[in-house]
Length: 223
Ligand SMILES: C[S@@+](CC[C@H](N)C(=O)[O-])C[C@H]1O[C@@H](n2cnc3c(N)ncnc32)[C@H](O)[C@@H]1O
Image (cartoon, rainbow, N blue to C red):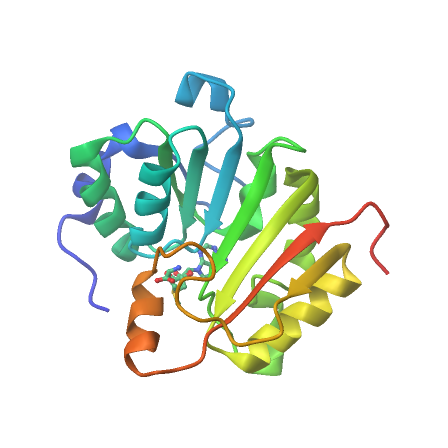
């Protein structure tokens, strides 16, 4: 995708819905120093859910609107993509939704332990080459971070059209302190609560099967 014009200025204009940026990809959380104070941002202590790789943000905007008693944080590494979510949200300024520009690799540095009740992974990039496996958002290096930031009975919820990525995720979750629950069938539109993501709509249009799981954090240590 071509870089959009005036991206920096446009992102800056959306500061009302941007909780911060994690821009120094190579070393550490850069622009956000310390952990995010959800009570300050949201003005309440409602439970917080996190979407990682939110893309253009349709799923999280609609989910937040339907769940005013829950707070939502959406993370996306691509500013070029996130700008759509930011500009759509800034008009509404939903009180229970904020975005972070940055990579999942660093999210553990800015979120407290036991802070998140649910993590959504919607159509995460499957990175099919074995040499790229560590980039998959269900690789053990991410699951360690998720275990830290999730509450004790916290849940990862995953949807994908990519069966090899789904199978990889089931195995990785099982080996890294999560108990995946599979409904045994390819996901049918509506199973997770009717809200489609941009990618989901596209794949359903091609009649592609979609695979779905939820995985609860377990108390046992990863194998
Ligand atoms: C295939 S898109 C899906 C977007 C959206 N969730 C949907 O279902 O329409 C995957 C998104 O995850 C983002 N992403 C991939 N790896 C990431 C990472 N390590 N940290 C944050 N975002 C990431 C990509 O930039 C991309 O926008």
